[in-house]
Length: 147
Image (cartoon, rainbow, N blue to C red; front, side, top):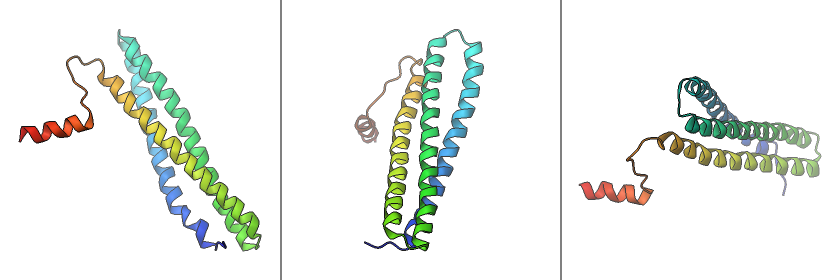
């Protein structure tokens, strides 16, 4: 299969948008860390805040890996385009495959980080007594039963 110079160029907008999303997630986590630091110093129940800080520390590491893999995918696309330009087609295929794998790994880590973010929200809500945690199906069912 031959690839043209347009093939790796098609990934540019996708990678750029996902990198923007990763940066926004990082900035949101950074703000959360700052607010939790203040809360940690002021609260007596430090166990919940400590659990949230551990979760955030790991999520920041994941975002760092997501961003690194996204940058590698972006650079690989550029290198692939150069190899196509100088007509090293076999090398361009390998570099493009590496770019796709890097981008896929970045998205997989992003999925993992999103799962962890929901656990962090559950931890935040855990100190509120009397709240139930319905499953999605139970929540939908309860909406239909009220009407």
